[in-house]
Image (cartoon, rainbow, N blue to C red; front, side, top):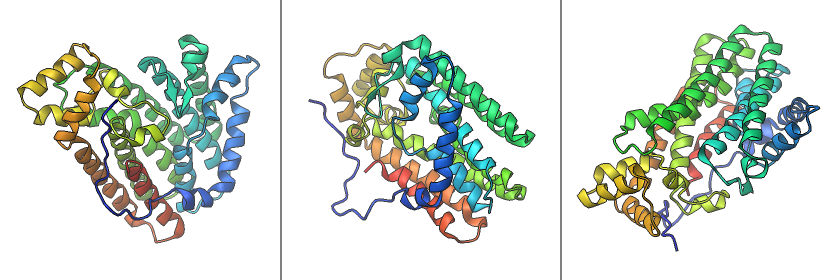
Length: 340
């Protein structure tokens, strides 16, 4: 049986942060966004909506489109443009998930079999391409070159991040800076764009757009750091994901980087065998969890997430206090407290 690392060493825990207030504020807009998503993923080619619906309807908090809607409300915008752009953001995200599951050979997502397991890699990649195309149609319909530049640039940066991560697979010499560059690209870029366009559609000053970009970018980094810690923690099972997927795929995330850096010669030899050489045997995941726990690599990964979370909160300092601002601050706490 695997040794599961428990990230929470506190005896008494305060109530966890939730997205409830933010979701309540954007509830009506999010319902309209979901209608747009369902409408725009339609195709006469039957497999496309069937496969897309499998992932889009599988659950999740729709965090990225929710951030677009929340950012727009923070800037005083109440029109329809934000709804279409929120759908656009969700299509970009869903497309990357379809492609990622193929690259990572994943079997489960949110507790369900992945599309590539059910329909094959070719169909997953092509439907991902279809959703990317739909996202660009929505960008063009919006009519703003600035919105188009923000979201299209994010799409390119995400792809670059995924390629960088692929290049780092099995490389224990990866630096923390290189790792952070990967997650800033593959995850945080879309968070940043999702928030920034909220200010753009509201025609707010550049300073506010930059503040929301910074909020989203730092929140995205914190979110991915927590995800990478969760891959080795007991909380992962509650999210419907297998423990140790990153380990089996040879991904050198921050928990491994810290454990490798702090380890002795024997432990480093272990990481080189299982990660660099890909020579994984029964019991290796349990040993990896022991080494990670020994060197407090998960706790320190979460501490770094808190650091970026604090910067995300600070970025909203230029906005007046309000319920929507408070709910966006709570979204930062929620993203980090998923680890407990």
